[in-house]
Image (cartoon, rainbow, N blue to C red; front, side, top):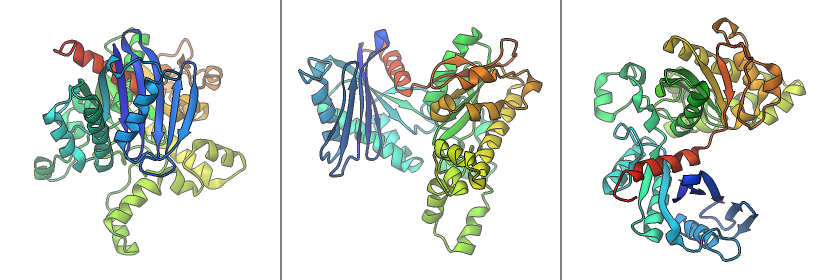
Amino acid sequence: MIILVLNSGSSSLKFKLYEILENKLLASGLVERIGFEDSVLHYKTSSKTFQKKFCIPNHTVALNSIFNLLIDPKDGVLTSLSEIEAVGHRVVHGGEKYKDSVIIDDDVIKTVEQCTIFAPIHNRANLKGIYACQELLGDIPMVAVFDTAFHQTMPDYAYMYALPYELYQKYRIRKYGFHGTSHKYVSQIAIKLLNKKDSKIVSCHLGNGASVCAIKDGKSIDTSMGHTPTSGLIMGTRCGDIDPALIPFLENVEGLSPSQIDEILNKKSGLFGVSGLSNDFRDLEQALDRGNPRAKLALEMFDYRLKKYIGAYTFAMGGLDALIFTAGIGENDPATRSEACKGLEFIGLLLDEEKNKNTIGKLAEISKPESKVKVFVIPTDEELMIAQDTFKILKDSVFV
């Protein structure tokens, strides 16, 4: 069964095409700068890699350009678009309504539209991909895979905020959490490696956006991101946890508007804001080697916040069987993994520094054989998880 996976951004469209019964990736790519004169289409198959630059005015044209490549006699992997049997869409926010992936119908689209109040940029972009597929592929079955769905198993005492309860009743203000597809994917692999369904796992998705998730018996019971992706860990340009009273303080002393404060919290803070240099770990670690004190401070703040969340979730679950590192930083930065594990010997976690140092971007166990807590590096694959979820949802329906 051939499944197309789409991840639509406001000016981008990422895709992967799978033969899902074989877990085989047929083609992948990305369209960048949609709506600009200098749009770029990146395309990759097992035998070809190239990019094309031309004006792509909207998501429909972007998707049509992808389709033209997929069936191109020279560069394509399909003979006809009819070979695509389903489409899985990454959708950031599904609110409280969806606890799992769902077949897209008018009601689902309406809910995704309603949830734009929670994720205005992301959900509107996700809808563009859905609308483009409807226009170009007609009645092909499509599935929405929500970033928030995995976290819908959190208990109310974990997701509620201590605000007047009527605000929750009126606006559904609560913790939703994000990166759910990634946390779900890597935790499923960890459970298989542990060979233990009754497990206590902390998953660390560390990239420009970063979050930690407490996963007990395969279910999310808490996560660091909240009502929006801004809270929790320090990130590339997001501040993470701060005192909320700083917002009216900044309004008063700096004369800033809500939108200006939002820009500070999400685009000018985090590693970039503290260091004044970059939101890229590689740049900061190079600056650290040169003795830059603010790069050192930014990295130490990140490591400290990460360790606090690992510790908090370990105690919340009453123990820890496995610690997972994933995403760009988690998979590729041994120094961050080492700092996160320092001082955790008292819970039985013993990191093998040599294994850790030699593990870059690949699946590996990096704890010592005698460690009571297993430490895994597990490369995430959200698109494969979306394809698998799409197949799972459709195989028991009338579509398959």
